Image 1 (tube, helix red, strand yellow):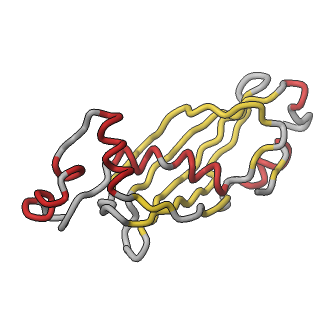
Image 2 (spheres, one colour; image 1 turned 180 degrees about the vertical axis):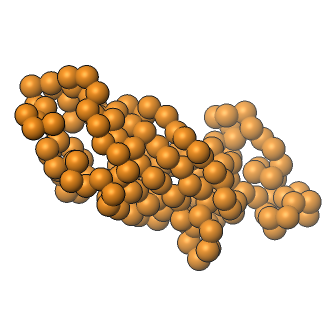
Image 3 (cartoon, rainbow, N blue to C red; image 1 turned 120 degrees about the horizontal axis):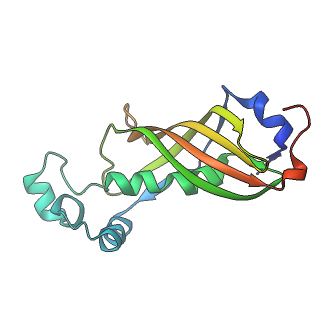
Length: 161
């Protein structure tokens, strides 16, 4: 994975930073997420009932499971900031679950840098326009605006910002 410096980040605003590798969302992953979140709705965990009673033809991933995969997708494809000591999830705006992710489907994330601004001495707020593509589907699984905070040593802050 390539790296960029803090001084280079501003020049990347408006560009697509990366597209992650495919992740298979299988029934085991869905069941583990259901156990972790106590959300055992049949459309997620009962393949036979979901096939018979839902419009999806089988089980689908929780929307929040798909959303939670963004961290791994980001780590996979977004350039690391050389001076970064830690990353913090700040939050999301306008999350939309556009299409269900069926059990066994593959998904990948697309990350466009929409904003980068320094906040305090050792923090850079980064906002991404993200989407999660479902392999062989026209509509994405989700779209969102995601803000993270890059923590760095204040002495590493570029002089010209």
